[in-house]
Length: 335
Image (cartoon, rainbow, N blue to C red; front, side, top):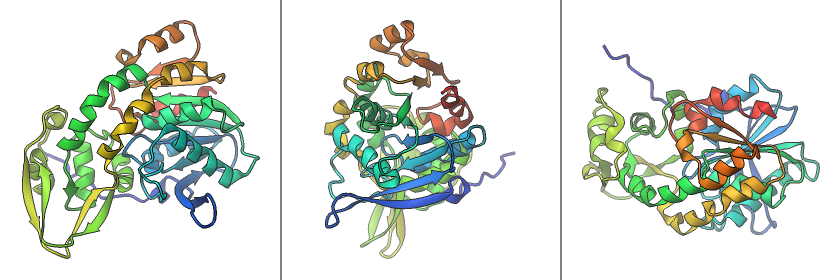
């Protein structure tokens, strides 16, 4: 018999101590970055999420690491993501995004930032590498890159658009979105999905009678809550056929906060050259991988030469710090 799972959202307060909106830039044209903080002593872990996610994807990791290491955590919503509001929300260049990180830390700590360990996942990992490489934060003492390998990232770029086209455009409720994220395999840890999906989707009022497009497996699963569902149908490159659910004016619907497909022109720049930049950073470095097969040539040679520490995690999806927070937690402890 199936145990009824709870897909309701959980507050950030369960994992972080504070939420702040940090203003950056001149008074008449400020950008406002959403950050979440935990801890008051020790080195500062600056956490940078992957594309389409938000700072809340680090919630379960924050609790896991705080329970084992005396540290401070600052997780930020990158521009265009989560609750961050910037004027040029479509500028996703590595230069702009790494400057954002430095500006937020400066706004929080002035010129006396504590020792920093930059930890980034996916695109956030590439931004962490660029931030460290350009020495934008002088107190940086360590770099952790999670599942960022230039070779495999470049190979995967073609399939990202197919993934984006294949997922539902919207959901009837936050619970449905959380259920989809777990059952589709996007996030394989229900506890994390319940806190982090809130940063990925947003409630919108339906302007006029509208049709809600759902990827075909989801209408069975998410709307009718069919529990006997496996995630294979989401992991294909095929574009799913869609079926529609009609909505009347005044009803609310949940949509993705960011249209990632519009950032496509930056994808190449995020990852090209990151392996060598990572290797050239004169810092203690750790690469966390979801599978050994992801290593490219430059990193394989660097690993053989002992230029960085590497840890391969047990089978998990790309959202490593959400799927296996305890395993990821054990990485930065090595510093």
